[in-house]
Image 1 (cartoon, rainbow, N blue to C red):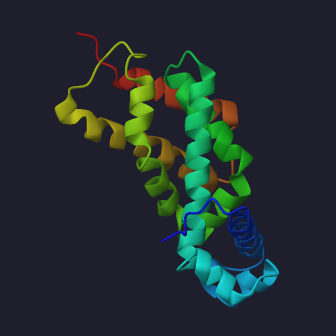
Image 2 (image 1 turned 135 degrees about the vertical axis):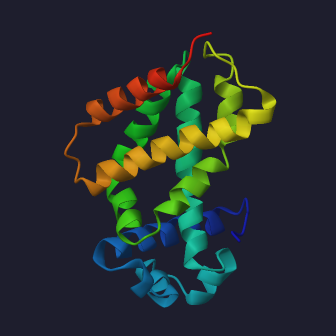
Length: 186
């Protein structure tokens, strides 16, 4: 649970706690990081941590939700959308935060990323539903969204696992090619 507030001081404390956790994840494994360390790194008391978060997973979820919201905003700003642009915008954002995403993967937490983005799938679908030549029945929509999100997530994880052997452009091209391959004309 994340304490939701309009209080600027609480919002700033949350940002400091997120930054502290991200910094600590560069130094040591996630499971070795204590809440006390996060609070100290943020120059805050542990009580401030607990006023804002129940756990360090909540800190991760706040940051991941912010990334997912940034992705949605980038899609909105893009205007005309196709699968190449959808994947390009996703991969650009992930590349901007690749150290964090890699740390998630290294710590066995990459599923948190997928969970965060899955929450936004219905909204992303609303943004893009009339942009593609093929429509999906409402009955199968959730499966289609999960299929695409899982595919993009798995490609990102494979790219990280292979130490970025392929270029960012190659990954975007691959996703676009796969999307075209999966499209069946009637």
